[in-house]
Amino acid sequence: MKIGVLGAGAMGQLFGGRLQLSGNEVYFIDAAPATIQALNSRGITVESEGAASHTPVRAGTAADFSETLELIIVFTKSFHTEAAVASVRHLISATTFGLTLQNGLGNADILARAFTPERTLAGITDFPADLEQPGHIITGPGGKVRVGTWTGTTEPFLQRLVDILNKAGLNASAEEAIQEPIWEKLAFNAALNTLSAVTGQTVGQIGASVPARELVARVVDETIAVANTQGVHLSAERVDAALENAYLYAGEHKTSMLQDREARRRTEADYIGGAIVRLGEKSGIPAPVLNALTTLASAPIR
Image (cartoon, rainbow, N blue to C red; front, top):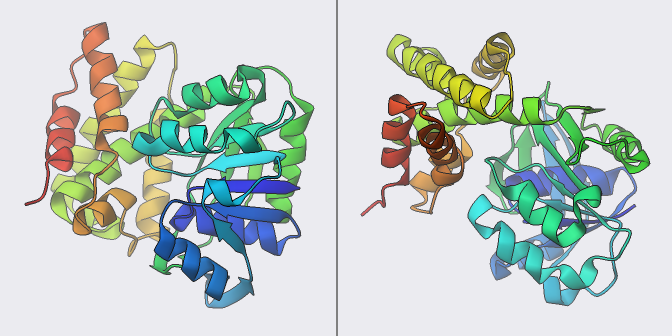
């Protein structure tokens, strides 16, 4: 399959690298000249449990590519989604599908305007991806991908996508009701990402701290209450199981939001915790713990 990876950060390099290694033609589309140069010169190495696989890749800005693509997977930060998708409009044909595996809310709505709702796919992944340097990704075992159509309808392309992801070792499954997994991942990220960004703690350090775990539980409860107002009924047990899995298998991992804070970059807090808080306010459901954490995680670092 001819695939564009829009946003060649850690997750984009992990997914694109594995898809390239499994026989697909992958174009890495990014706006950072240093990342583009590094990927073109070094290729991508994916390391997991001490084993490494390497592949040469092709990277560039959106303007460097002209052929229409069968699939574009969006991995940009949420605040870049609209501009990024607009930059690849010339690569989208009447048969191109768009897939968002991004964190936060609102990204699929942007894709639906560019690809049409019928050709928009959305999903979640819990694969860890640590960027040692551009072109060298370290990941771990046990990750998975869950994808579905944004309209909730049956789409033959969805099963084809799942098969391609599984061939690449990305442990994918198709979901009829993708909103529930998306909100489960949102609850997970609202708890771990915002708390790690505020405290500077790794996933394992949060899991080892009784006060931190109490805050995580409060955020999960607040998110579930807000999700209910949107007609999405979350399983607290599944969210808790995902958190325990992260504590156990990704203890050394720094969340993407913590990495952004350490690099003095803008975080996605407003699109994760902030989105939940705003929906809660509209529905009369307060989320005071998440509101406080989001405010702190969004504050500029001087």
